[in-house]
Amino acid sequence: MKTRRITSYFAIPKLSHRVWHVWRRDQDVFMKTYKVNFIPPLVEPVLYLLGLGLGLGGFVQLPEGLRYDVFIAPALVAVSMMYASFFECTYASFVRMYYQKTFDAIIATPVSLEEVIAGEILWGATKSLINSSIVLGVILLFGLIRTPFFLAIVPLSFLAGLLFSSVAMCFTAITPNIDSFNYPAFLFITPMFILSGTFFPITTLPIEAQTIANIVFPLTHAVTLTRALTTGGLSPTLLLNLAWFLVTTPFFFILSINMMKKRLIK
Amino acid sequence: MQPEVLIEAKGLTKKFGGVMAVDNINFEVLKGEVFGFLGPNGAGKTTTMKMVNCVLPLTAGALSVAGMDVTGHAREIKKMIGVAPQEDNLDPDFTVFHNLIVYARYFEIPRAEAQKRADELLKFVQLDEKRDVLIDQLSAGMKRRLILARALINEPQILILDEPTTGLDPQARHLIWDKARSLQRQGVTIVLTTHYMEEAAQLCDRILIMDNGKIIEEGKPADLIKQHAGEEVLEVAYDEEVLKFLKEAFPDARLDVVSDRIQVFTNQPKGVFTQILRKFDFKAAMIRDANLEDVFLKLTGRRLRE
Image 1 (cartoon, chains in turn purple, red):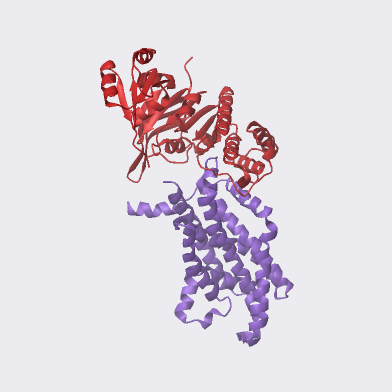
Image 2 (spheres, each protein chain N blue to C red):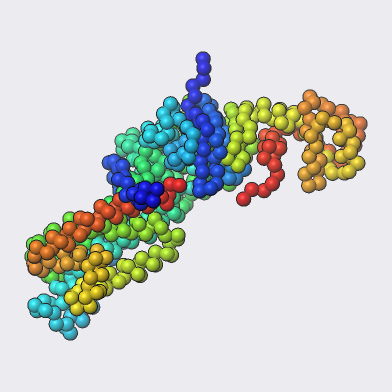
């Protein structure tokens, strides 16, 4: 009985092409207001590069003589993946589910609830791709990219976005109300933002903290990968970072769909 | 010719945790009829609708739509059903027209066809002037009409109207009723839930009264009225003497005292009350036709729900 309850959280969802109808709905809304949607990924990296890169960067000595703005630029790209998809599948999905009853309206049609959730997650991943590509464009203009490998960041941003969206959707499945998103936002997302090797090398942290950052922080792996792909420091260990995504993403994708089903279909 | 059964429930049951929302009910909806589910709040009407629409799984029993079992044929069944839910779940991010277009996409209606239908439907519900307006600029009545239009975008064989006129003014209510009748003439089978007895009496060919998840009565509105409330009802101001007198005058009648009024229900033919009133002069006396509300209150009681 108990094992059946646990396995029910990992039942493989039945998905069809109808997932894309849900994705299209979210894309339609995004396109209606695309001008304001482009402000955060354009403005934020510029501020960080000016404030931290130029301002703080003068006081920072990095190993291997890396310039500080070159060091943080790829982290800004990774951070934008996290924020775009996490907020899309927490606050925005919750508004659609709870306040707008959009999910209820859709599941009265041939689209199933599994497909609605999958569509939302795919849209969250798409937001990650859109926002991080813009940030990538900004740091390219700032001349902070050292190698053409940076193009691989675009597909990576979709993969990372899938993971962040899926994790976010798990929180959406259990949150009692919209204010409770403060828990994951400040106890998970903000620590990741600071402690994932974003603004200083992760090796300067105590070993215990490094271990935690490597095991539970997706952003650590995203930052490691984006940094290698903009600075050119490619090494075989990057495959481990990629493997980490390839294992965790399907796990949380499936889990989040089943958790949402349990929340919405009694 | 035997009428075709479109929706058939046998022993249909839905439990939420320990609560029996729908408790072992049987019913049949025939093709082309307007079938009403009546009942106080929490009776299980909406839950039943959601099971018909394949959104909620059954706890027990069997439910089929157009000969297909709801378990395992959700997509086929949802394709032929249009739902106008109780709650406003229109998409506030889109205009009136775009709401219909996006909804048509979920049914995989080709774009050109969707646009054609959307324009026709907006005319049908008299919202063509609001075509490019955002949802939050619509009145409650307009929203209900748009929800009705949206429910028709897939040209459904079955239309589920879940409390379609709750909170509407009389004009808006009559418009919805007109549209429902015109859809029935076009051959659409309509399943309606309501707690407005007038609505049920106006629209429904057959009704079913639910309370606490169970069906307590079923039939044609006129038959139910006749059976449970008779033809006419006498109402007079409450007075102990009068009550005593009426009890003697109508020994077979049912006498209800509601706040300061006495209501007399009888099986006797029309006219008996007129005779009494000719002889006696009761205070604030009134003879009126029995209606569905009398039936409903008799069967479900006057206790407040929720």
